[in-house]
Amino acid sequence: MGNKENVTEKIGYKDILKQREFMKIVSASLINRFGDSIDAIAFTWMVYMITKSAAWSALVFAVNQLPSVLVQPFAGAMVEKMNKKRLMVTTDVIRGIITAGLAVFYLANALNPWILLLFTLINSTVEAFRLPASLAVVPNILEERYYEYGTALNSTLSTVVQLIGLGTAGVVIGALGIGTAIAIDGVSFFGSAFILSLLKIKEEKPASGTVDPGSVKAGTGEQAEKVSKDKQQIKEYIFILKDGFVYLKKQPVIRNFCLLAVLINAIIVPINSLQTPLVQEVLGQGSGLLSVFSLALTVGMGIGSFVYPFLSGKFSVRTQFAGSGVLLGISMYSYTWGERFQTFTVGIYALTIAASFLLGVSCSILTSALSVQFMKAVDREYLARVGAIFNAGASAATPAASFAGGVLAAFCPVSQIFRLCALLCVIIFLMIGLAKIRLE
Image (cartoon, rainbow, N blue to C red; front, side, top):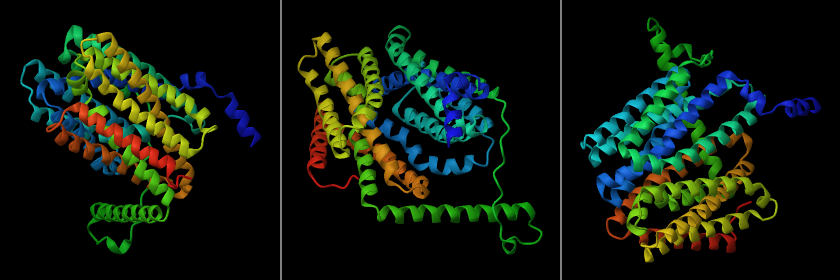
């Protein structure tokens, strides 16, 4: 034990910087993050400019989330048998072509809501394969003793780059236009693909599964063996998933955490899907405020993550959930106050910065508390399968709530949707704080 601690103490960020292959992945990730940060503002603004509808904005956001729920679980299993490096390069190139094509369509005034939906669906589906591949390739290039510092370095640098991207997005859109901003994101994918193509990695082939000799007919050779392996893997996957549901059914605390995750994702959907309509219709501002909105939100999330360990030592789990949830609701409601003084630009910006910062802090504390308590509550041998159910359920809430929000936006003002979600959030989390809902 003592030797392990001594080895850990000697490892630092300077050691990660010497891991050349891992730093290539980090560099590619940073390029992607910068492009995505600019695209996050430009794309939401473009969707609203093309559709002129809050309902369509919510619909496009919902379609963007669908592959994460429907495709990624199956993509993860397929990725295990594929060359991870080649897959990451290929998917980045495809996403670059799609994103650049979207920019061309926009600049040519040939973009319509249906083309937007199609491009969004294809891009998100490709990304569903990219994410598992990038996760699976790390153990092949980074020793286990470097995981913590490697993850921390990647996360820290990504946050810095994201802040830079969000801060410059408004300037890029204002000076060069939405089409150019989208094109920058497309170029970033090609840059990422180039760096990943330089990776020097020796991937291990997946271990062969056990095949029942009786199930392979003579003369069918490798093809029959492959079919047998695939059937066996499907049966194993179904059994493991079913066992996870049985375990979850017997654990009320974990079920409550899953319901909380669904609730949180559903409540914050308007922040993502109706962000541009909020800025234009409710606050009466342009893309510059949208950039400030995202920037303050990101800073708030960073601060919330930093202070969470200190708060968790001073407050009970119930208080952490209830307090941060109520703050989340108040933050959402406060955006609508700007509807009363749209012409007071300085006041609108100040209100948006304060509301977005508090929203980021509350979201970060809430999700951090949920993740930590979930890890503590689930038995280690069930963590992977129950975690998959947890993530799938939480992700499914996003497109479902987006579709519902899109329908609602067709019949009532965006400000009313925000007020409704905010009031529900405050009421629900006050009930969690007062009622005897099992959380530990």
